[in-house]
Length: 232
Image 1 (tube, rainbow, N blue to C red):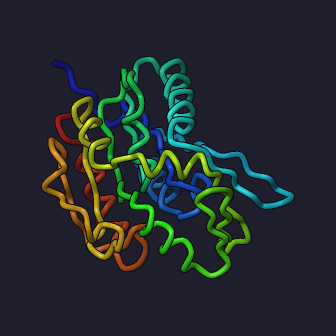
Image 2: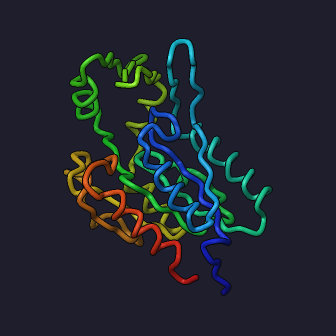
Image 3: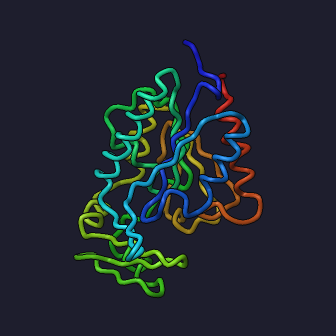
């Protein structure tokens, strides 16, 4: 079986919930590293952004999946000779699992791909943030330091509370090579039993959920580079 070299791959970034494609700076950091190795990468926004109200309006996972499929189809058309690697962060890591067709996707690298689904835990976490308006039966508003506001409809909450991220990641691992990165200081994973994650490579790094601070991103990049060059 022929394996592709890094230059024969194209990277598609899948960002997390409620933010724009690289509010965290993580994907820009990785994209710059990839460019230095002549590896093409693409970012896209799951959400539309209202420049007047500074609102980012979210939607359920199923709609995310439809938007991801559009991006994959565009890459398949533009780069028919390349394999696709998805690098995802947070909830963006489970979105590929909703797709039935992952043709040309050879690998998914998911960074902090875990989120809370217990209704009481979610409400306590969101309601505790200053300025948040949390209404799980209606529309919630989550302001950010940069002035943007994440608008969360009840349809998102309804789907989130029915979602099992571990089951989704296991489903994804049956389809493609899956590597999961977790930050040891990520408070969201305190109740995650990693032994339940089957068929995935799991790598734990000294980092928080967003992989900020110290050398966590450089360490992450060293691993990503290794994964991209493996078997090439």
